[in-house]
Amino acid sequence: MNQSKIVNLLNRILNNTGRKLKKENEWMYWSPFVSHHKPKLQINVQNQNWHCWVSNQGGRNLFQLFKKVGATKDQYDELVELVGDLPRYVKSNDKPNIVKLPKEYKPLWNGGDSIVKKHALKYLEKRGINKQDILKYNIGYCDDGLYCNRVIIPSYNEDGQLNFFVGRDFYNGTMKYKNSPTSKDIVGFELLINWDEPIILCEGVFDAMAFRRNAIPLFGKTIMNNLKKKIIEYRVKTIYLSLDNDAFRESIEISEYFINNGIDVKMMNFSEKDPSETGFENLLYLIDKTETIKFSDLMRLKLNGTKRHMEILR
Image (cartoon, rainbow, N blue to C red; front, side, top):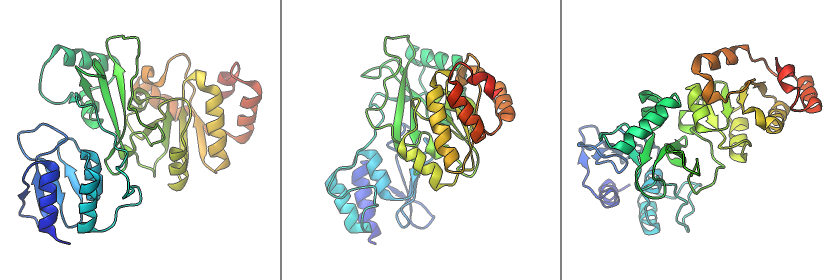
């Protein structure tokens, strides 16, 4: 592996000259993901690990970094010559399907004090989102462009790559959500998930953030194939199902699928409010009191339908 050529390629891709650190094979670059007064993107050119110490984005090979910054096919081919073949999720004859944040995206944890930013922060405060959540989820906003007057909530996969984002209007416009124009068949907030612990499945990002840990948004009422496969692959033992009350049929279908695969399912019972409106302490109480659904319970739920499912779950 020719490290000097890799560094030269990185200099061109990142449009700045890396600074060699005392630690062997480590280089520091200005990060393309944040605006900061110091270089914060650290790259090991030997094992290809990279990490931005401000945005907390990172990965385990340079192909992931190249994908995030929008490298061309020629640049991918040059990297292949230097480090070997592409990972299986990147096709060498195609430019990868890259998910990018809107070019107008601004992180809310960064400086600045515009009127639009104040409204975005006020909206998030009303939704129960605090400063720690903003940092944890890298929440931002747009004050121009297609996503103007929306908070932007990114989702990252297990390698730190952006795989989706949600844009939520905070000025009560006609269209509440304008999301990433890419497939929802991903694992939401995957970077933050511990598969060895029980996971929580819920509809939206605000519901997932309300639980504060190990909650995956479905971006709707149904579960996509990639998430199903991941849950089975990692042998998850327990799932808390936290869909809204109007998603009864979908809750039954999801429960039946995982019960048939040997996974304990606990269907949480919400009265009138969505999870994001329930409050963290009440969510903890509901988690504590929710019991595993037996197959006989599931059959009773299917027979009785939506009108009586609340009573059966009590």
